[in-house]
Length: 317
Image (tube, rainbow, N blue to C red; front, side):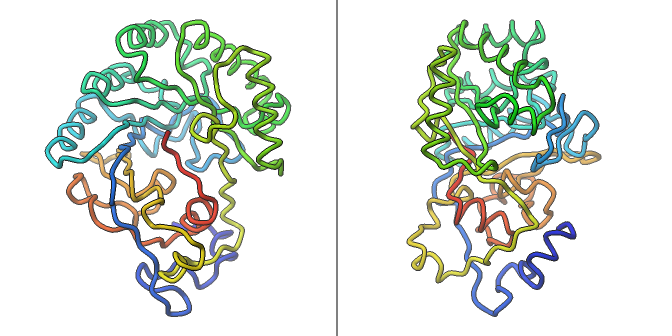
């Protein structure tokens, strides 16, 4: 359900999946090249950020822990559907809160997929069992595993403004452990503070150099800078005409190349979503199978416009 701020800012919009408020045909995106299948490991997190798009927290279990056997079932479906998947992504919540995180990661790696884990690199990742499991995965599949660390800003005080006092220092400890053990790392930052892209990348570059992190600040796959997803801001609806006007291709949208599997609290089985950013919007739930998830996605949400079409962002590596 859209919140009151969204409804106020975009009154009359995003009501009909096929038609915009002014009667034009709404843009849609086909699953033209499925490259990434995401698994949400659960919405529980060790911290509560000020602006978390999925409202993760130490108490939010709206999306419950997904199990390794459920992940394996979808990996089987990838092969059955012959999807050309390159990458399996794990997001949360904090993935390392899920007790089966190492087993799920191994299940994907042993089938030859690249794996991307989104983490804050704090206490859940640094538990002994997780560190031991990660070291085993690094030994067996190191070239295929990347951990993308949430560093909202390279300045500690701005990062902590979002994630809580002392968060930057704790994340830095985790990153140093990953560095010392040869893990591939990437960074997810935010543009909420108004820095230019060039200034942000220069700042992250200095941060990497200071700590000896082998991360390229200029590579958008290694240093990902996300636009803020403020649902109180008015955004335009995307029509079929917008592709030509904006010189954009629907094939470049995130929903052309990815889907996300979640498990809702109380549900018997997981479900597949069109988008990683819209776990609480029922109209973007496509069914329980990858076959059902091959349907087109109608861009009927403010995030579709602001984050993907206009912002040009993608969660994938």
